[in-house]
Length: 132
Ligand SMILES: [Zn+2]
Image (cartoon, rainbow, N blue to C red):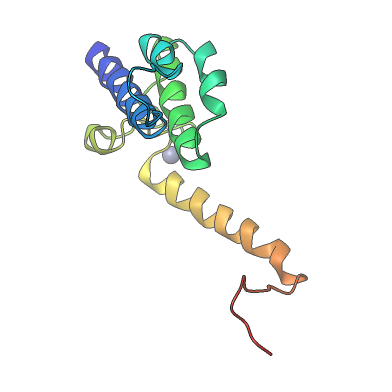
């Protein structure tokens, strides 16, 4: 289980590094503050990252942090929904998977349904180029 944690920490670092590269100022010689953030993989730093992360990156980072937590709590690799062991193959592809395939699919279906629902009463207005 230790190697799994290392892998997650590495994923986290890669993610943060990618963001650091992106947010690097064009002026050479100026080290961005994010350098300090990379040095640390502690969770408190996630707050600082919050400001520069996209929602998608934030979500991924949270998932990774969450998985690391679950390794520490020895609940890693168990489906949070039904408690079955998540197949190793799945964890390999998706190291921060929280649910088994069945539950994940079920949850995604539910999520989609819930997302679609509020739009029912609201008329969707396409952004931009609609000419009357
Ligand atoms: Zn499950």
